[in-house]
Image (cartoon, rainbow, N blue to C red; front, side):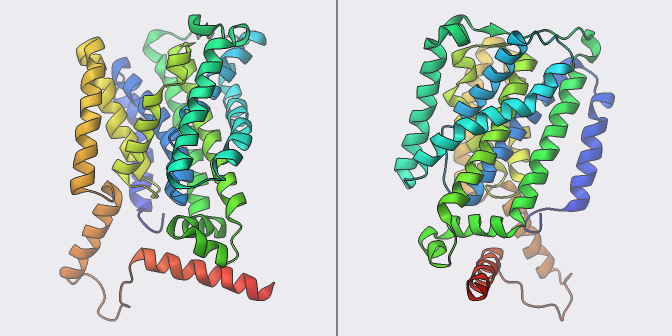
Length: 354
């Protein structure tokens, strides 16, 4: 929050989001925003690991699918009726996804760079194949259906909207706490230089694994909410390789490693996708992929740091050029240098005390 955030703006945005379905009550519009909020939760969770450690994970669709199948199977086995009760299964779905992330993350995080990316992709395909072949549990390619809520059509999206918004606030709160904690400084040290972080006494392996598990928890919850909102789950739908591309682009678009960046990226990209699908029916899927490709090129060329960090830097430059800062204020040091100094001071001090 201190790096890129603007608390007043975030509070204003929260009020706007709370009032949004009241002002714009069209089910098509609220449906688009529900999808966007769900993906914002997933992108925020992904950012807790990849944004803070620098390890780009391309297999989180595995935990999205685990969460989707968990809420579906539990609802059917426990005869949970449609309505508000399935929402209580969302944290459990996240915990199951986190449990899967423990051994898978432990294996993947024993490697670095390209090898890590390959292993995360491999774990995704393994779980996708399991969903196809464990027919007694997942019903194979036929899929499973969740209980349908008996809410009227004009308010059908509202419970999904506000529960998704609450999930996003929780994910954002956890991300903020990590970002501003000593543990978060350790993750940022790993992102900057993992070997140097080891030299400072940071236990890099546990640090990375905990972040990976927390990330999988929120992605699993997002998958469970997505499945309940759709009403059914199938292997190619729950374990979709494009999901990993989507949340990575959302984080990069908004600003990798920032708090509000993944949320902004999710609102822009997912809303665009849903709009194209709504406007052009099945052909909208192709337009959505074209938009992803074009946006990715634009980001790399014009906004390599993402929207939020770039705007923050430009605003500081403009403020200094207009003389809005106090004359006697200290020289502004780049935030990456400040982070590095805080990291060294925190962990070197701890080593001396130990």
